[in-house]
Image (cartoon, rainbow, N blue to C red):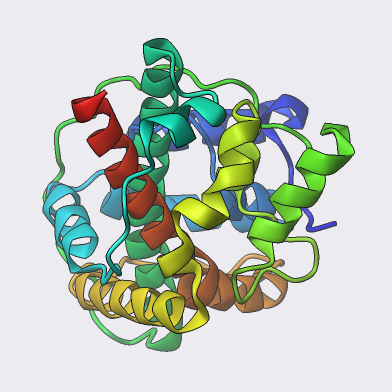
Length: 272
């Protein structure tokens, strides 16, 4: 299993950082990369202290919008009303709850790909000057989400479907299961249907193109937002390969998935 500390298991010091991540990011969850950093000595506090000024800055909102707009997506057809019904989304409340969750993951993943790419670029070039970023307005508190499902607690068929979705992404070996797919567990029909709904994006060539466009845009934004950096933590050597993998592969893959699914659900909500 990929090492992580979940919010329900976090000791007070880590729980306080998780609460600050949620408040500053404007999202109701703590993404996997931060939960993994919490499992490494000294890394979570150091990484969040470094990235926090970027996440809280005024330029972050515009940078987030530019990255999202730059993602290269293939043409994807909206599911039919019958397909939505089979997935359990014929109820307006269920659709609204899913849309809110996906919107949170869009914001969280785009924010993280910019901020953590900036951290990677800073580690690669420690002598470059840090950016001077004006603070932004605090985001409104995000409505809470249900606790993230544990893969071992899911029914066998649903767990297999979640693992199959994770396996579509480069960089998800060693037990890495993107939080998005676990967050979809309350909608098992969506988990089952997602590979069909996003089939054009999950095609390997299309996913590589979407990832590359996300990575280019994130690196362009991150290069102008390089953070100041403090003394390296004890766990830095263990953290670097994961930082590289998540900022080059995992998160740039999940950003297009989140944006594509958000677009499909938005279209379904308008036409439903």
